Image 1 (cartoon, rainbow, N blue to C red):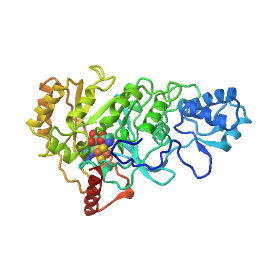
Image 2 (cartoon, rainbow, N blue to C red):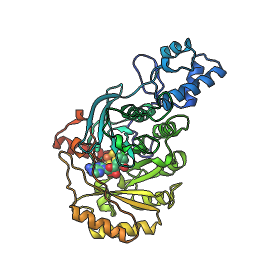
Image 3 (tube, rainbow, N blue to C red):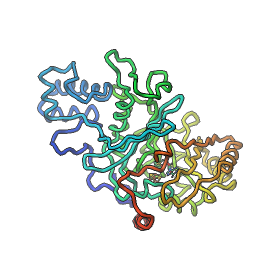
Image 4 (cartoon, protein in one colour):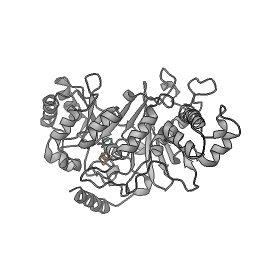
Length: 411
Ligand code: SAH
Ligand code: SF4
């Protein structure tokens, strides 16, 4: 999708994950797309309709990757499918587990680009943090991902593939009796939720700006939400944007998931510095787009993310101004305070715990919830803003030069 006035980071839009062996990867495709492919492969209307429905169910509800396992499909038809199609997964390059139970996977696309996903187990839920792009063009000053040189949009298959991989790793596909799966060699079993699953929520807070890859993110989330497949509720999915104003209404209408907005500052001067996209879409425009976001109400609030940077955006005046803005735009909002997660060469420090507490209290006194998010997985560089593939280590000088180039391109 071309953003007006912005250079799309991907020259060739891709809906289907490219493969070198000529077979088509069905991962990430909708029921209708699979049906269309079956029609193009000379199945008649009736067969295409039936088979695509069955295959969709096997792929996304049962987690099957081998056509031979699709027992309600005729034995002779299974090799026919396998000759033409595959059911892929992202390639896992590295899997790490933090001392706090957070898990991070380094993944690789078929064209050898690296990206990451993170799973955060809690007592009452398990949140999968997925990536929408390899790298990010937006270069927020406090974010490690923004320093990556290569950027490419992930395909729907690569996005849905992350959820599938997490289900694989957590052993959460229905077994023969269709009951929730169990995971023997796993030490998180105490965290299972009522329906027997650990993975209960998804956040698009990994690498990339999801609203700069709108079509693929929408198509992927539709597959993830589809009732015959993974069937995750839109209320359990949160899309985080740094403020791509022209796409926000469309996101509410066409995807309808929860919205999180990376606000991080309340004045033009500071937000321009730390979130360069602010020079294009300012705070007032952004807050108006939040007020207009379809589906936001007191039962489904918009989350404002606010990274706590020492002596930058963390004063009492900042907190008061944040409250004033939320009230001015009558926003059904909650604030998530994120202690800054450091990375090598980062130009900021994290505010002190006392400052963060005071900031949170001040907002709370005005009737707005402002919890402090506990950093998770810092030891394996899995916390917010720390994601950057291992292959991408650069010197400070090189990072600064790239930052300047990107800011110049943003105009
Ligand atoms: N690109 C999207 C989503 C990915 S980032 C966005 O910016 O909203 C997810 C959240 O982590 C964002 O709120 C982001 O601003 C925040 N973040 C980035 N770097 C961080 C860091 N070093 N410490 C804490 N939070 C960070
Ligand atoms: Fe991109 Fe979000 Fe990082 Fe900003 S904070 S550089 S938008 S991933």
